[in-house]
Amino acid sequence: MNPFKKFGFLSIYLMILLSNGVFLLTHGQFTWTTVVFAYGLVPLVDALLGKDKNNVSKEDFERLMNDRFFDTVVYSLVYVHLFQLCLAVIAILTYEMTLFQWIGYVLSLGIFSGTMINVAHELGHRSSKVAQFHAKLTLMTVCYVHFFIEHNRGHHVWVATPQDPATARKGQSIYAFWWQSITGSFLSALAIEKRLLERNKAPFWSAKNNMIWAVVLPLVFGGALTALGSLMIGRFAWEVLPFFFGQSTVAILLLESVNYIEHYGIMRREIAPGKYERVNPLHSWNANHLFSNLVLFQLQRHSDHHAYASRPYQVLRHFDESPQLPFGYPLMILMATVPPLWFSVMDKRLEQWQTNAYDAQHISQIQREFA
Image 1 (cartoon, one colour):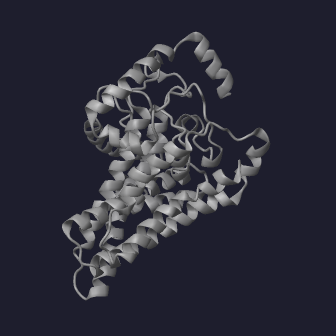
Image 2: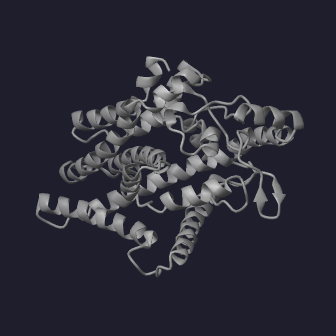
Image 3: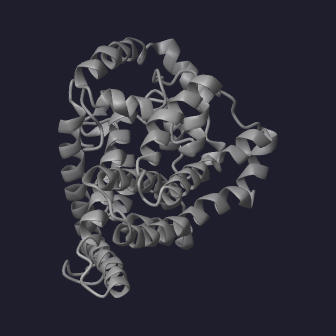
């Protein structure tokens, strides 16, 4: 891996510096910086830098797996995020903002919180208890702790099948998908946790039920932020609660938008009743646009992640055979918010995938390269 790409994973800190820097320099008057960065600057730099199809060599694989730099980046972001939320509480109680400015600030913090769900996603797939603790801690800050349960034990099992609420159907709008995935994922996590409790002979209403903690902990955290603000200004800081839940909503919708574009319309073959073919590089939409991959820790190399969920972000691979998105995730999310535009672009690509996906020669090539 060349130094530009290695240190390019620090690009997310550019978002932090720009957002906080502009916000502080304007005394809270310009609050839309992160929105401009994510949906303006990132697609522009993607277009300028182009795509990156390079994979890590076998010689570099072990070295990169053991390079602490990559862990330091994601772990440090957890604490930066917590610090930013505390600063945000101070900011909304200190600066006078118009409704337009307040909305911009909630969107900006929510977009960054959405990228933090990606950090939690990276850490949540690791076997280390320390990594899993940091994943849950981060998910607590966006009211989505149950994602840890459902994503690992539900989505990765049922992806690209009708049983997966986080897989969008062909012709389904992003707005219908949001409802399907948010409600379906919560109910799926509840069912998974209930089965685990029954297996361990533990009662549902007990401290061992992780779904109870998934609901309680974000409320406690939101209450703690409110208490911090209240102590600072000497009255009940009610403004903190709509801010906290507002940025959480933005982060959740951003996550589910990513789910939408990653899995839109792609389905695995059912090889027996209720049993599906193994996930391979054909079963997720991918994008190799360099800059957005750096900001998102190569989440856009999604097929390799689904095949090897514990593979760290720095060594995720590109496959030419994987279905490819025309743009990086930020621009694709904007496109998805206009369903007729999305369908006109993506349905043609989906039909092409359906035509080629089960060509015998194609499958044979996939199996050789995916080994």
